[in-house]
Image (cartoon, rainbow, N blue to C red; front, top):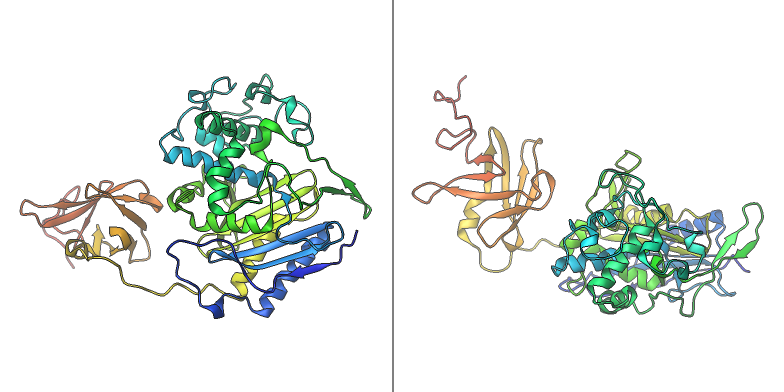
Length: 482
């Protein structure tokens, strides 16, 4: 097998239209030659040091693949963007999106015990959110022999996934990765979709809208064969590619570099036909403390979280016999890295995918969108709310954002920032930070004039400790003094 071949895409490839997006000027679409060389070198080092038969990689930015590259060979040819690889646990991100769709449709709540919707499970009290975040305390792997290398017929029913002790740890307190838990989520999707197999639900509701017609449950040519690489010799051993049956939602999918670029673009911005940005942001919220006790890594709802060089990345790594995959997305910088390879172990694909995105940011920092004024009629009452407000003596600024949203930021360098979504009842709900989920209300006096802001019992006034405002505990009647 030839392993010295390589290729690099000469032009960026579109991976999907982002509704409402403003086109990027042509001079900023194609990466600079030195950036492309740095990307190709990083991929080449990863393939060579990892001793991978083949490896492909890509960077997605502003909704498109701005670079793709490949090293090694498959059947004597350089791998291309339409070649399928198995993506392992990246499958979990797809399953999580299906579950969040069910939640958004009102068919379940994340707090629901899975037994409310799925009969016959040996862990009926595990909640949907706990299964998504690997915090139900369930056994890590399915009962019986190594499920990734054995046929799914060995476990025909959900009850067959677990032994006599399905719960290994107390639920809800620790992160404990469970492939078997995602098998239950796949069964849950089928139950709430009236018996339609989860893979078919995925095709109809996610893959087709996003144009991902090369992502499948079983390999469809052209595809790469999976290999194990001998640890002490440059020799290969074929790996089996079993249909894992009920365990499929944990790692069954096959996909291509082109399709995963589309998936990365979706994870960065969302798509109203599949799942909106707010639900994707919820998936990226840490669910429980990471098992290591350090916040450099964690897990949300179906996505892994990683802090790297000051950036927060969300995505997933995957492995199945003969294959490794990784996708990391930085939503703040609107960039993602993707890596696929066909060997069981060796290449550090997670670090490589993160590095690909990081190289683009280091060589060509993101150019911000042009500032534009708000659209639509401007509400003078909302505009009058903006400006300085004081929590006690601590100054804050309230700014008006799109969609009647508000943003509160401290001006003294110490304080709590939050963005707020406008509600139909005239209040606002916190979206992030300390005030996430809290209600912001505008309080008025008997004459209808604005008196103060009430934010989760905190009183914000127009002046520091205004005597006329209902500051809890009152304000000293002698006022400020020197």
